[in-house]
Image (cartoon, rainbow, N blue to C red; front, side, top):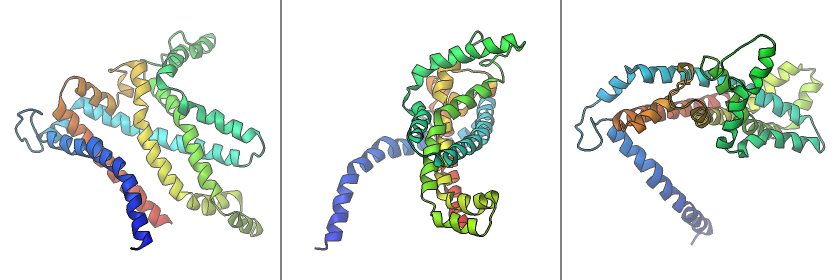
Length: 283
């Protein structure tokens, strides 16, 4: 028997438990939830076709959460990518013992539990918190958690939590770019901007696609901190789709909940396919 054939099947046996777990605990429940989105209620419900989807797209709370979520992703993902790439390039120029120390500092938020940080954010952004203590002395009296300033709080938490992760991804992508490209560009007298646009960015395209996808996914995970800070009904400027789905879960409105999750899942799938297609076209 072909050794390569046997080795492939042995590898499949190692993957099989994880694949079965994915099917049982993720894929199959998602398929069931899609079915619930076409029913009037989860138990003994009648088939209502697209009524739940039409009703959802007319729901003011859902439209508010959708608008705020798209706005937050459109702002946080580019800002996060720009800062993480900039820091990765700066760290790439550092050598010696300081480089691991700087990398560790940026990676610390990944290992700090969200719940333990909520107290810090409350003390920092609270009405009588650390930040307002400095601003009051300058004549400013902002309300961070119960006004439109909450968007800044949300962006700050997102950057604090995800900057290091994206930085490491970009550092890995930068290390894979052949040094010969930069040496040839230097010999030709190319400017820094030309080197960045013609060499760095095209070579980083596979990494950039991964960073965009992970940033979008992580933008939904910031809900934990926002929920612990501001509750289930925060200021309308930071009312996200996660708030809408979480509130419908506690209200046991499973048809509306599964309809919202189905639309979100397919939107994420289309985004991933679009980014992969863009990557192939650029590369």
